[in-house]
View 1: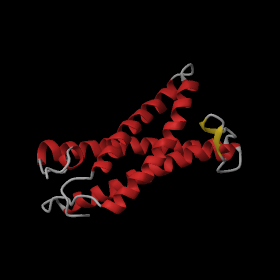
View 2: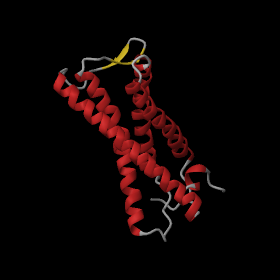
View 3: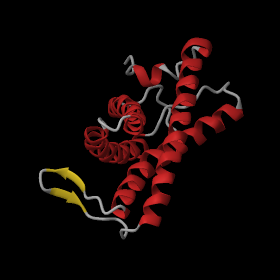
View 4: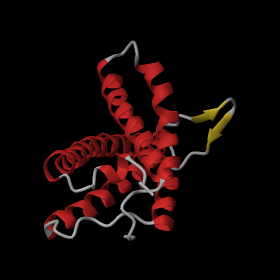
Length: 178
């Protein structure tokens, strides 16, 4: 933690960009399961967005480690501080692991992962139905977990914005006044 009261501009940009991408990915994932006719085009959208989220998560983690984060309010109960730290660790773990597991799952399914044009990611694991099934199950359950953590994160943010009014929400929505 640093003594600043606001996240830096890059942190705020990456946060809101990734929030939009992650919410889009969750809806795309549900729609892929619900619609056979839209599934191919949604998969074509899902894969590059997953790669983008993974790369943005790396940028975001590097920025967070080098620039720090604002301190939480000193009157915040210890359990809430612990929950905030744990939820952020879990969010970052999911932002890293879901794209990697998706890539591994496709590799196990012998499905090439296209970056753009004729550029493909190399397979991460050997092709095989058992590995594919296990990775698919992990990808689905971790997506459900991500949804739950995002909802909890949003509830906590709104609690800080509307009930506590302690500047925590503002630290991610506005830059420093000076």
